Amino acid sequence: MSPGARTSEVLTVLSEQESERLTVGDIVAVLKDRAFALLIVILGLPNCLPMPPPIPLVCGLLLLLVAVQITAGMSAPWLPSTLLRRSVARKDVERAANRAVPLLRRLEQWSRPRMSLFETGLGLRGVGLILLTLSLALIVAAPIVGQIPLGLAICLVGLGLVERDGVVVIAGLVVGAVGVLLNAGFVYALVSGIMSLFNL
Image (cartoon, rainbow, N blue to C red):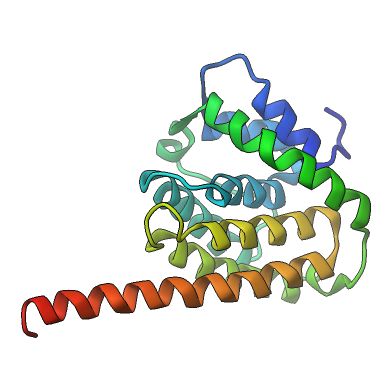
C-alpha cells in the first residue's frame, strides 16, 4: 500500500488480511503514519451498521483514548498492549468495508483539501475534544441502532482529517451533534424509567 493510499484502499487491505481475526495492533500497523485519522475512520465504521452492544463499547473506549491523545497534541497514537491484543473477526471488518468502500470512493472523488483550520494545532485539539464527546456518547449509546449516527459522524470527521477537507469534518460535527442529542434522550428516558420504577 502506498503512503498516499486513500481511505477506501486502506479498508480494502484490512478486509483482505488472511487471518480470521484482526488485532488492534494489526490494524494500527496497516495504518502506519496516518494512524490517527484512519484509526478514527475504522473505529467509526462498524458503528455505521446495527451491531451488538460489545462493539460500540469497545470502539468507544478506544476512541476515547485516541481523542485524549489528539487533545494532548500527540503526533501518533499510543495504545496499551492489552488493547493492542484485542481482536475483531475479519469477516466483520470485511462486511463493514464492503458496504463502506463504494460510498467512500464517491466521497473521495468529491473531497479535496480546503478549510485548513483543522490542520492547525488548535484546530486538531478542538477536534479531539469533539471526538471525546462522541466517544462518551458511543459508550452509552442506545443498543443496536443508537450508535449509527455517531458512527457516521466519527467516520466523516476521520475522513475529513485524512483528506484535509474541513467541509467533511464540519459535516461530521453536525451529524455528531444530532447523534449525541438522540442518545442523550435515550439515556434520559432510561434514567427516568428506572427512577419511576423505584419511586425515586
